[in-house]
Image (tube, helix red, strand yellow):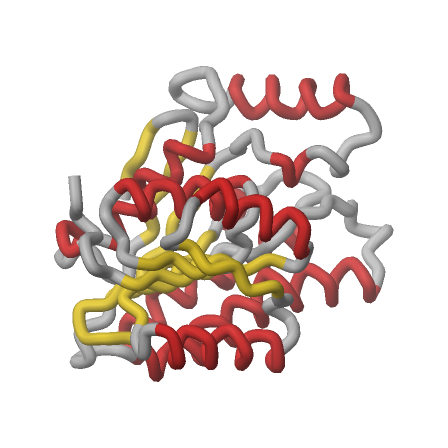
Length: 250
């Protein structure tokens, strides 16, 4: 298949998990070049080496506008355009009401909300007609799981961006959509719980509330992202596509 033949893509948070899986999917679909970003140089470079010579890794933090300027300058000098922007960088951290701190709130808002805004806004001048902007939201943006209030609020904001930015870009032939995964077992969970048993308990709970009684995989999400990046999805705009336990629905 070559649904992305010749296309130039940027993925933030591309060194592991959903971002890395999306990079693999884009390459499999024929993308000419995929830029991936991440904060940790060693992990990012290892991902780029594994993915091959059509991938360019650029270390940077989406909360740092100077880093993003450097990313866009590299894309501009190398290819001069972008067809796909997958604003995926983000993180999750639980905290119950009554224990919230400035660091917790500012950290999540900085990466998951402001980081998405700066990524898309700075990439926009490079976007061609027919381009696709894809945002990573989450099912928690519309659910009420305890201890996840700030993270859930950031993902609800991202859902809203998909709709409002699609209106902002009306007439420019640039689509904006959000993908909202359920619980996906990725390295992001490695440091979230004190023990593997606690993590397994969370995954088992998540599986119990999904229609297929299992959690999803990063490859499943990546296939949905690749579809949204392709011209086959030209009819999908300002939509939220849920991926939960192997089920995808708009």
